[in-house]
Length: 177
Image 1 (tube, one colour):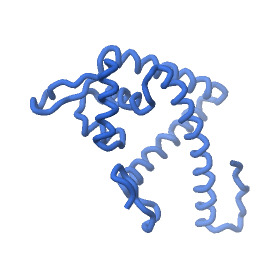
Image 2 (image 1 turned 60 degrees about the vertical axis):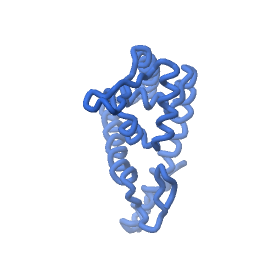
Image 3 (image 1 turned 90 degrees about the horizontal axis):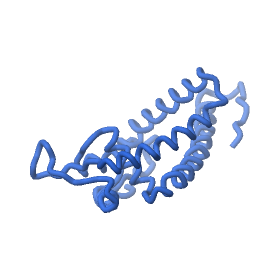
Image 4 (image 1 turned 120 degrees about the vertical axis):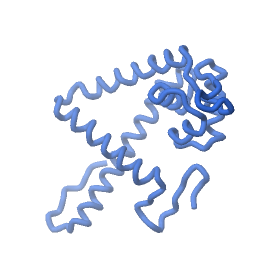
């Protein structure tokens, strides 16, 4: 979607609204492309995108309990259990007694799970390198910085349940309220 030129007579609120609309359109385009890319790149390894995110969480953060993984993936506990069950059946994740509480179970990535994750991640990073190749180093750094800042701000604002519009429904793993 093309952005409309700024009207110098617009108020700050109108410019913010126009910028928010442009950002929404740009992010929708980017997310749509990445959803298809991830699905096409990851699913050929016989795991879902969500299962790959679970492997990534275990690689980046180490062993954790199912509830911690559910929180990290923004999933409810039953969905997380199904994701982990599938990964365990495929030999990519194992359940073991938790180091701090023998009554609890900790999820750990296996060697084959780590190997699969590394293979998938290398392919995704190679695609990012191709995407960034035509940009100068300063632009690449700026783009990465802005995306990180937007992700952090969105997580702080939206994942915590804070809504931009006080009257808008808030939806989470239990549905909308």
